[in-house]
Image 1 (spheres, rainbow, N blue to C red):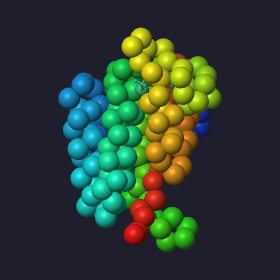
Image 2: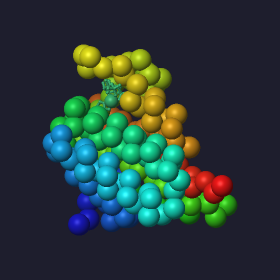
Image 3: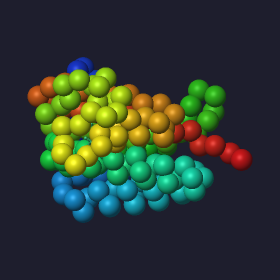
Image 4: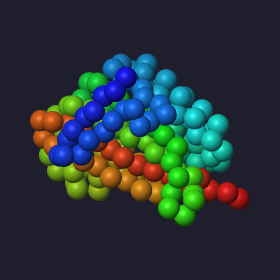
Length: 151
Ligand SMILES: Nc1ncnc2c1ncn2[C@@H]1O[C@H](COP(=O)(O)OP(=O)(O)OP(=O)(O)O)[C@@H](O)[C@H]1O
Ligand SMILES: [Mg+2]
């Protein structure tokens, strides 16, 4: 499957990822969480980091399901400049996009009732790098990475 998405001139090619998981319904969130968790475990991430990664996948896939209705979670293992191993989690959708990205990432901003609006700010805090590309009416891409730590 080759699928290229383009939002704000940023394109994603799903061919480049080890895992490409479709999010359509509630049950897909748990599947994505488990698949990425297993992938991280298999690649030697610590239990603490595997737990963080699972939380990140839950938050991002829940946002896709809630706000965009459908989209994808992709994951891959990468090698950093210094030879470090990284795990990248990417979420993309062609949903409504986010009006004020800064505000959404700062935390405490939500368009949903009974929510705290801490999903994205939590993701940013848990991971080592975090980038969000969003265009109103076109969609949202979140790209985030975590380094594999050796103890
Ligand atoms: N994929 C997305 N598409 C469109 N809007 C989004 C998307 N992800 C987040 N948002 C917007 O950004 C806001 C903040 O998202 P965030 O995940 O931080 O909090 P939340 O989903 O509102 O609440 P919580 O995650 O704490 O349950 C959301 O309320 C929504 O308006
Ligand atoms: Mg959320």
